[in-house]
Amino acid sequence: MSKFFASIEAQHRDFIEKQKLFFVASAAADARVNVSPKSADMLRLIDERTAVYIDRTGSGNETAAHLRADGRLTFMFCALDGAPLILRLYGRGQVLTRGGEAYAHLLRSSFDGAEPPGARQMILLDVESVQTSCGFAVPRYDYAGERDGLDRWAVAKGEDALDAYRREKNRQSIDGLPTGLFEDENLAAEEA
Image (cartoon, rainbow, N blue to C red; front, top):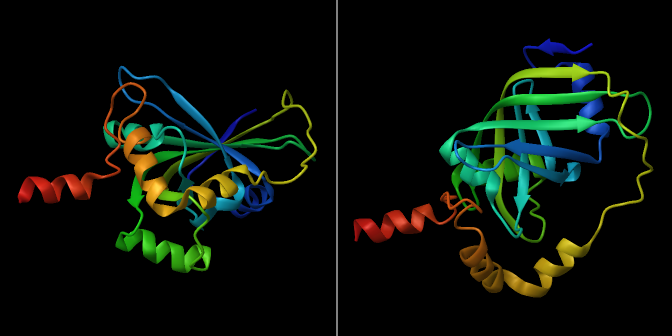
């Protein structure tokens, strides 16, 4: 049976903090639904109503585009070992721009000031509800470790090439929605 909760309770935090993987789901009207797997090492629970993760450069930027257009966001965790459980955090999300004040504050306070290679932005979830369900159909998996391919790729590219890559691949969603990744730059150009 599924159960709903108004916020992240202690038992939810304990479960989330043991996970190695979570999924992020977002959507916007007339656009594809996006579901992305994320390494939980970049996720932090700020309090009982707030979660954030450092989003790293990838081939697309769907979550940012959907948040800009719609705002709805879901994080899903599922037990791949131990007792079965699925836990979802539902709410509204926002993008925290890399180099911005909120990003810098959370980087210091929640990530010990350490950015992973290829950090692009942070995604913050204002949790409106938490749902748990049985997870009986989720198969068991053994955790074999983190992959280092994204780290190696980002380090080899360097900041200038990563910026060029983001400009080419991350300005809009696959459905043509703007991501706002370079919005500050665009606003400055419009004001000039």
